[in-house]
Image (cartoon, rainbow, N blue to C red; front, side, top):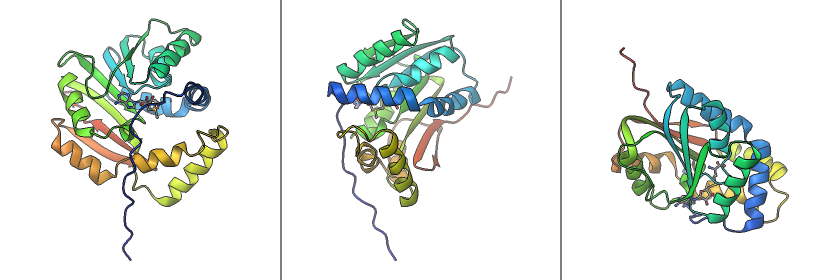
Length: 231
Ligand SMILES: C[S@@+](CC[C@H](N)C(=O)[O-])C[C@H]1O[C@@H](n2cnc3c(N)ncnc32)[C@H](O)[C@@H]1O
C-alpha cells in the first residue's frame, strides 16, 4: 500500500493579531518549561556557557528568557518579524526580571542582524515551518556562525507518525485550544512543516556543513555536530 505524503500548506508570515499573540504568550509561559529544559540540555551537551547567541523567530521570548537565567555568561539577542511579538517578549523579560539580559529586536530569518562569523550559538525553535525559503535561512546561519559555532534548530516534521500527530493535537486542543483562533494552530503548523527528506535536501543545498538531523516523536532536530575536544 502506498501512502502519499500530504502537500505542504504554507503558514508563512507572522502572528500580528495582538489578542492571539498574547494568548500564545500566556500559554507558552505556562507550558514551555520542559521544551526549554530540552534545548538547554543540548546546549550543555555542546559545552557552551559563554559567547553570543541569537534566537531566530523568538515569539514571546520564552526560550531566551529561560536560558539567560541558566546561562548568565551568554549574551542573548532574539529576533522576530512581528512587532507585536517583540513587544510581548520585552514585557515578558521585564516580568521575569531579565530586562537587559536578552536584546529583543525586530528582524528577519532571511537577513540576520549579525556580522559574519560572530555567533557562538544560534537557536531557532518552532519557526522553520514559517519559512518558505529555508535554504536562504540556512545560508544566513552559515554566514553568521563562527567556525566552531553551534546551532540547534527544532521544528515539527510533516511525515511524523499520524498517531503521534493525533495525540499531540489532542494535547494542543486541551491546553491551547480554548482560543477559537488558536485551536487549529498545531495541525496548521504541522501541515506547514517540512518532511525529513525535504529538510535534508535544503541542508544539502545550503552552505551549512557538519549538521545532523534526527527525530523525536513529532519533532525534527537539526544540530551542528559536536566538535570533539582534543585538548
Ligand atoms: C510558532 S512561533 C515560535 C516562537 C518561539 N520560538 C517558541 O517556540 O515559543 C514562530 C515565530 O516565528 C516568527 N516568524 C515568522 N516568520 C519569520 C521570519 N521570516 N523571520 C523571523 N521571525 C519569523 C513569527 O512571528 C512567530 O513569532
